[in-house]
Amino acid sequence: MHARDLVSLSALALAALTLGVGCPEEPSRSTGAAATTATTPAASAEKPGAARQPSEPSQAPQATGQAAAPQATGQAAAPPTPEGKGTIKGVVKFTGKPVEMKVPTARKDAPFCQDKEVAYNAVLVNDGKLKDTFVRIAVGGVQGSWKAPDTHAVVDQKDCMYEPRIQGVVSDQQVDIKNSDRTLHNVHTYKGSETLFNQAQPRGGDPLTKTWKDGILKLTCDIHPWMRGFVVVTDHPFFAVSGDDGSFTIEKVPAGKYKLEAWHPRYGLKTAEVSVADDKPAQVTFTYAGTEPEPAENKDELKGLW
Picture 1: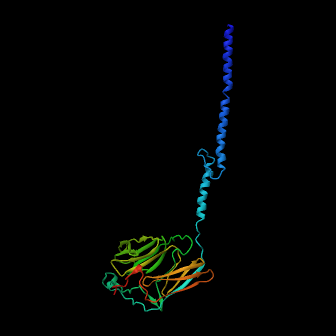
Picture 2: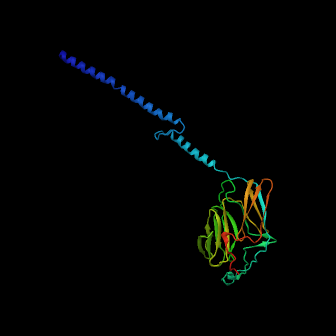
Picture 3: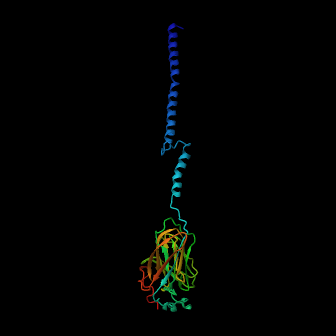
């Protein structure tokens, strides 16, 4: 081999060695950059409210837990239902001369209904005490959130009358309207002058289940026009209906001052202020004279009945 060939080979070997030494430096720089990128999200995660990277599986459970916490806190912060110990007791008096209740004339000509002579029940007074007056703390008057009870209220059509005449329910409580008579009825229900529904109910038919948010609901029957009942819907459970002796009791009332309402389908609305304490019942008396105008929710109930 000639000397110039040896020189050429030496030059090639030196170039190759130079290239081989330079290559390992690139992975070293690349690894350094990757390490810097990996530590950056960890630093951000330590800051409150920092966004999580989808590629961080180790951080995902922590983010999920943090997201759930405000929901639990929000539920716990909802206004609690007060546990009341107070009682409101009272009586509804009647000082005037009550309207005489008779058997409706149309009843005597109606098949099935004519079998029983049932006197009407719009105004029932015993010893100066008025029955079937609905008494409640005014709507919105009690702080707290009140869930409708699971128990259904029941309105029955019995002996061609609505029974009970009047009752209260909590907002969204289910009401079952039954027909225990051996004849066809139709349940025509009003809120004010507006018809909410008008549905036929044959004898032996399934109950009609309804719910309402608020208001005074009037139930009638177009087939038997003397039939009338009332459901009063309230956003809390603090209500009662006066009994045969005019008395009423509202229990488990949180201590405080309240506006109390008494509503009678013939004689309308009365109000009173009451202070409730835990240690003794609050006493209230409502008095009707019998000269009060009919309420807007129930005009002309007795017109043409006899």
